[in-house]
Image (cartoon, rainbow, N blue to C red):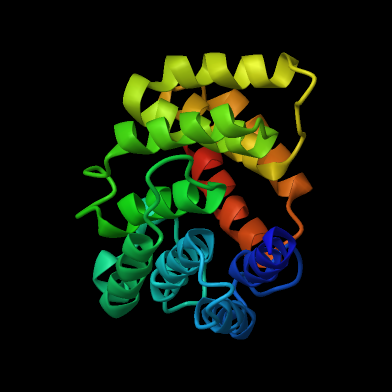
Length: 235
């Protein structure tokens, strides 16, 4: 069952954040992944808490689809997304499945990821997001099993809770570790943190590196737009 859930989530992830090409989202793939998971939940032998947790996670992610791309077809950061476009019915469906996924102890990674997505979807605004709880959930994920991707994603709420200097320290520690992954996300986070610290030239270097490592054309276009804004400020 664990392998089946992993395959469904990998299918969903490719639709949710397409790794290459011109489309950021492939809704049909995501909806098919949810359909498969719902089929499992309707089978008495597969109706398990982790199945419901995965469904909740996918529902929360899909609820933000309409806010992730603007009217011009360009990518929108979560910070600037119009939360009125979030699908409230899907959020409620996700909450229902998250409740069905309740376990007394030892939650799965799907539980923790669904909880993180829940806080993102239900926050009144980006600024009002409960970053402390999200940071705690990432800590719990790392306690369960170390993952360099989880550690990298954890730096975002760390930045929001403890500020840019703490985030810079975490980025440096991660870069020096044997688990370091040279990917676009690392440099995109570095660029944001350095920008907040007014280190515009190093922020520009980080964005350029993120663009170089990005294969999705829409995401590359989004980062290039940020680069142009930054370069105008340096001049």
